[in-house]
Length: 455
Image 1 (tube, rainbow, N blue to C red):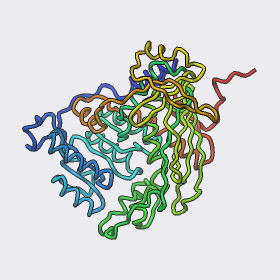
Image 2 (image 1 turned 90 degrees about the vertical axis):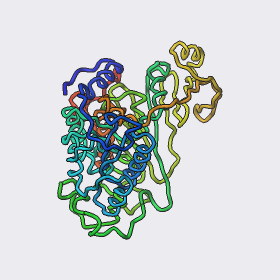
Image 3 (image 1 turned 30 degrees about the vertical axis):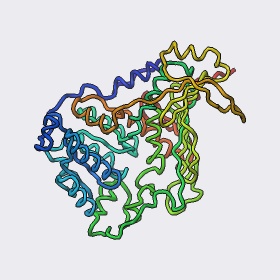
Image 4 (image 1 turned 135 degrees about the horizontal axis):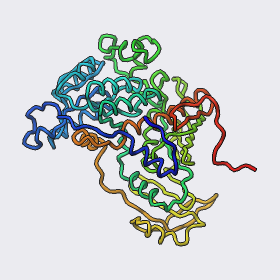
């Protein structure tokens, strides 16, 4: 990967986007069965294998089987799982082949792409193996839980000309693309801080899922699942607690940062532009939930080279999170599930409507209440409704056929992983982490602060 000196924020982000995964060839899709041929020509039907058919993989399985019956443009031809009851059930749902060993699934000729829906510590290895086997990949978030592994997945996908979609379905939600248009219009002025959160609360404790009594050493291949024999984790004895509630343990990832904030950050970078971080610092603690070795309170701050800061909250013991907003010098963009609200800062309210119209932004002008130091004020703001947009899975299947770059590709996954894993490391090592975006390496020494005038 060739490193270049960055100039402006816009040029820097355009360069990164342009260099993500280019030059993909257009291979023939795998052999098809005759199912639904009347609806879709065989050359356009995609065969999918699903590796891991628990909650997330099972959701994909049912959705794709339903889609196969309705549209005929996709079919699930193979499934793989290390837990025998799940594998048996998945085979019955899709009617495809079932494999204990995912390598056997990757060897199937009638598989174009795979969905990787396994615990996080397995994401990198399976994604790499799938690329090497010539399969396109939809890997659930996080793409990996290690920065070096993330770079390997990106480089391997590029080398092998594979479509890799990171399974952050929210990155295909249209409200983030409306906000992206707002940012690119320039009406916010200099971007300063973007804030978001994904917070939860529960009586029983986060991720304390049901433990099924039929999970035994006979029905679960613990040695493979845990990953110690592949040096993915330290050795552990058989544990149904860890199998069903693995998100609670550091062996398998980084808690809410890995589970939720990687989604959130992926969406924020759609809006503000993707780049590598230069500094990440995290605070938090384990204040309430003590049946695990993962924090329950988590606040992280990410500083980017374009002089922009992202603040995220991943607290699991209080669900009152901060609203999603992009704070600019001249205006703020509030992002809601159905609409985007663009409100001018008080000193720049005069003439703001005309500025938005000149920038080509369209929507409805409404009165909204915005906070300003212990008080609310009514101000005229632009309300922009979201529009229909293809789903994340639609995008993945489309890219398998066309060889286009998907919404959240391996390079985006790499950039997100760097920031998220720096945050997790910052928390556990209790120090600020620094990264060189040009050389793409973690720094051992603290660099001098830039963009600060001194006398």
